[in-house]
Length: 117
Image (cartoon, rainbow, N blue to C red; front, side, top):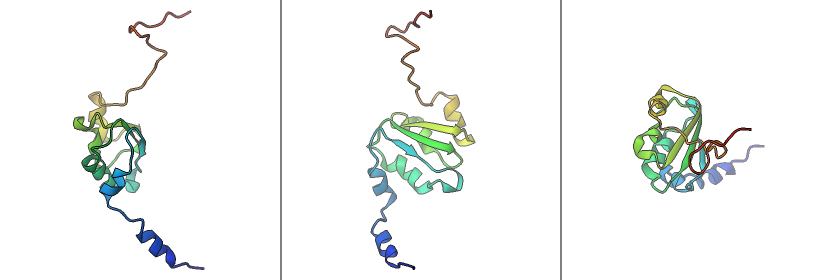
């Protein structure tokens, strides 16, 4: 049976892209859909209205659309991780704007590699 009341319930959940971005907390992982599923308005709002964000990880399967979050000005706010690198983020990866991988076992506090047995 069709329930027409879902339309009313859905309308109450609609917000602007800016309002949606304000609900994201700093330091959280953000998954962005790929290809035709990429929410372009939300991606733009992420950079434009996400001044409160810091150290957020953006995860993509494949980047095809605009990727303003890889711009050097956003380096303190976003780290980009993709399973497949698209042309739109390749330059950022070539110039070192990539996620910092923490490998505490690889280096000691003084920067010396630990001795191997």
